Image (cartoon, rainbow, N blue to C red; front, side):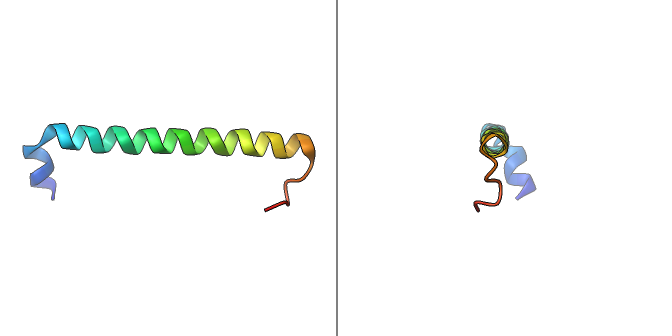
Length: 46
């Protein structure tokens, strides 16, 4: 697997970029959701 990524840097870059993007969006959503829950006081809704 590692060798394949080394031979195909474009795929590795796309994979890393996609992973970073997903993590960034996930944390952004969690931040917004937790903030709105704190404002409404229904943090135990889930």
